[in-house]
Image 1 (cartoon, rainbow, N blue to C red):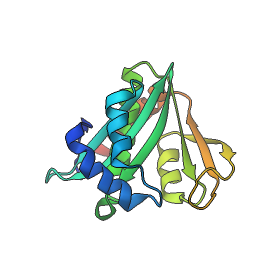
Image 2: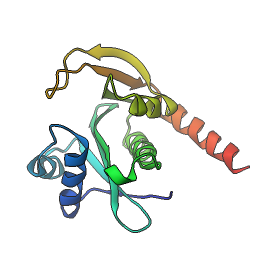
Image 3: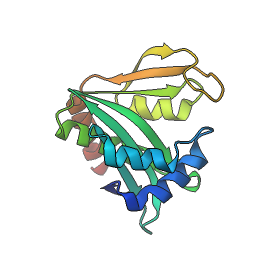
Image 4: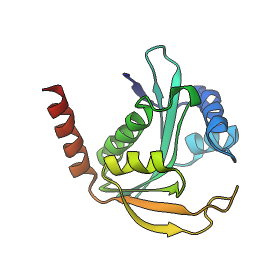
Length: 165
């Protein structure tokens, strides 16, 4: 499925808040997204839309020095397992690199194997555990790092070129 990526605007917040509610036991509030968009100069958030123009998912990160910290990735429940998560992450990686980041990190629930596999396919590697990180059930978070965004994006381009042949 093809997706278009755009920077999140205040007009997207209601759609994003709904995706957030579908995705997480303790979702960020609408106000939290407004705050990120209007007050956090280190934040960058995107929305991916499917062919119909529907917001299929969103992602966000904070850019600090030469590192990007992924804060959120979520896909609308009826659009999962169709490439939206991959589109979000590749877009975030490209935007992070364009803004001077060379490394990227994120936390993911230890029980969320599909997300971990996505991140591994994109070049992230496990680097540690944050015990009892998630507030809803005190689940541990797996910390994952991508140490060279440029190399990972080149490798992904190479795979896409090979798939096209």
